[in-house]
Image 1: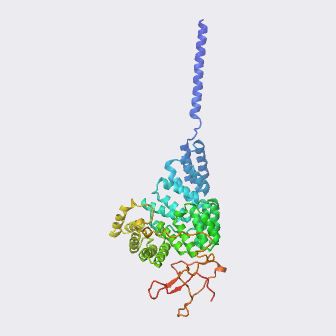
Image 2: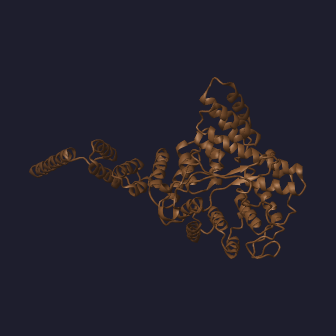
Image 3: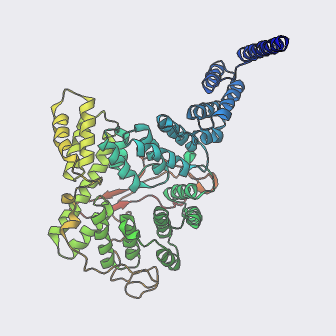
Length: 505
């Protein structure tokens, strides 16, 4: 029996030795096999390659990292950077949109927003990205500026005003933002930012651009096509209404436009401005006054509505209320003028006048902003700091509206009994569409009497818009009209007009 036990023992020993040999071989192979790089290693390799200009090698490493960790935000950020370096902007935008990690969201959103502004047809996407960052941090200056740019390009002045006030509340503003706010959000539309894409937002922005240029036919076409895709977009509806009225469109077109408006359109002062202009065109001056009142209730900074309503009240014998509207119209005009001087922040006298006028008009956000700008320009002057500190105490309780209610003259008079405008094919007195009766015509008349009263002037008609195209002149170089009031009775005695087609002489 001993030999058998001995053989079993030897077999067991041999098996153990064999296992040890196998373990050693496998362990050695595992220790010496090529290591699979980690995500961290791959991203480090990609960054190093990108720094040395090896863009393709960098992209290859990033994509390898994404096969291991497809949701890694750092990898997507790096891939977007590589795409930007290669000027593949749509690919970069797509990469930024994959970023989900909170610490990268703001940077990715801002970068994507700026790239969308460079790409045609991506205004809506740009707005979405900038707004996502703004919602994370309303004090983010870059997000505010990007969003403001989108709104300005789109002609959405009302939304822009709300944003600009939020920027002042968050202490993230400069003199250009104050200037935009002081202009009621109206700004120059840059055609380069709009592009020629066919999406609804770009078409609407292009329509607003044509409207500003006075090309009403092109404006109507673009705005209508935008509304075909987004029929409930109210700011586009209002822009189309303005294009229709400014171009003397057929009555049926205006009536159809009114019928198509959203149910909530009447909350907008721009609607009431349009309705007032329509009523005046139809000879219904009473309904126009009602519309002017509705406009000023919603926007007391409408210079035209304040002036028109003031004149109506004066002619109706209500001198006290008329004066409040006419005085406000005059101060709004003064404010508009002085802001042009104060806009760069270097003229402290103009800044002080701007602050004083803004506060008188109830534009507390603007008065605070301009005084803060003056205080930052010259810390040695006392008045900006005292005004700023006094107004700062009021800001927390103020709504994000330009004007405090106490300074709105329309809230101190009730004209709700006046008739509302009628959008139909009839004039107020039944006269043919498009003409007011003599009774309702404006009392302003233009008569060519220059020669008979001894007024002579010579002009040079240097442009030929038919053959050479439209030529423009900066306002500060020249242009405009002259209105003379010799006897100072606040009624014009002579007009020197421009803007009409002159005969060649």
